[in-house]
Image (cartoon, rainbow, N blue to C red; front, side, top):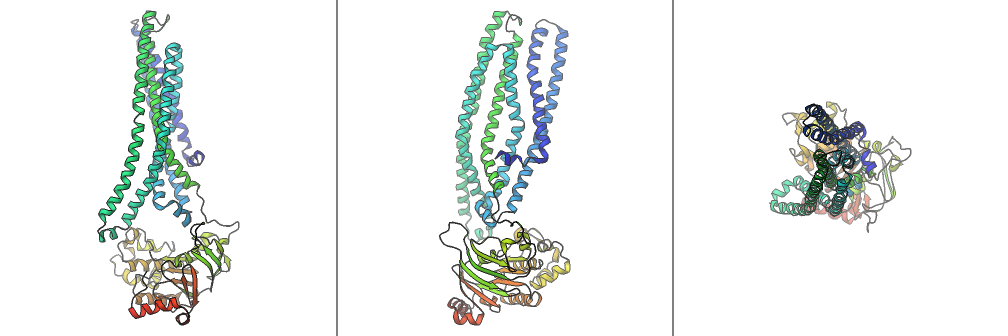
Length: 584
């Protein structure tokens, strides 16, 4: 796990090394200062020697200033290293997510990926900053302070060897009981983000059904669960401070009691035994040791929190896409012909029932194919195998006479354009959205694509026309307008295969007819696959595939299916007799 995380440090290695280097110098200076204080008291103030007071005082000022400077540089380097590490970590995670297949994304869920990219990365960033600074400083201060303490008085310093294990065991006990709670908390965060995301995306539905109270109740329930786990964890962590205080005051009392006795016995003579200055420095070292242990406890607490986050981040970084290129992938798609040979598909490998079962069908290049079927007939699953959004479990899907697994994924998808029923527009102008289909498209090409998609007419009515700003998700255009813009975007790819997955459901039948007519006239060599609920949208197709429960029920032209396919005939009659569309 650590190796995987540290691979994201990269260009910030220099600051990662500089931070502990500065901390080392800072620690040495802070350890020297109490010894100088002892000399100042014993050989300057006690002996009323102003020369020693001035010289040692000057040395103290120099050490304090150098400690301050190295501390500033250590803080700066630690901040740069941790921030840069977090930046790279987010980039590496996001880059890997972009390579995920749909099944990989389904495994984590969108809300979970967002939590890992934000909250979890912030936790790891905070822990990393502590590790390169406090985790170096604290052990170093403990070791140096113990060495200097034993040099002053070995017997009194044995007190530290009693209190340190007590505190260490207490910290270990707290850590072991808190980590499982934080693991549970961050998994609950995923659920919380999912509720927020779902609510905001569907806020119009929530308001139209007056379900605000229900959504608030659902949010409050998950939020309460996080509160309870966090409270329980914080209550256990709270034992850290009393334990620290107990060890600190016990050490101070023991040092003062036995130290005072030794000073009296030696008559405050540093040569004969313990002096006042040495006792003062011992007390300072005691504070440094115990404060360093306090720092370590803070580091441990942060590590507890970040460990769960680190494990979740590494899961994303280590996840390999289910879809990969072969050894020698092809980069050229000859034509838009498609065949399904005994294709079986399931979303989960151990599913009881396949989503698609033994599908066999051939589609010639340039053909217009309609796909009809009820809800759950697996129409969308069928077309998603063509651009390798998913892979078939058994059988083979070919495009241009070549197995889709033998193509370079990017080259294949460049030749297959999909327009979904709920396609997404991104924040930016209409031109920005259209150029998702072709980054170098000219204005003339964009206008032509929009004319084919019957979008140019309503775009010209906007004050800014093609420079009209589209809000995130296309919330400032109607459903039909959004679908036509998405069709235009797909046409700009100039694909060999165009798939419309119920993507004219929000437009009227006249506009739907004009779009299909434009396809026949302007892109006759492009294979067109149209999934529809309306028979009128597919009845002029070269062939119509009727899917039922993941299987092909019938294949043929409109007139043939009316005679031979009961499912098709029932849909046709229900729509023509009642004048409505097929209801899901």
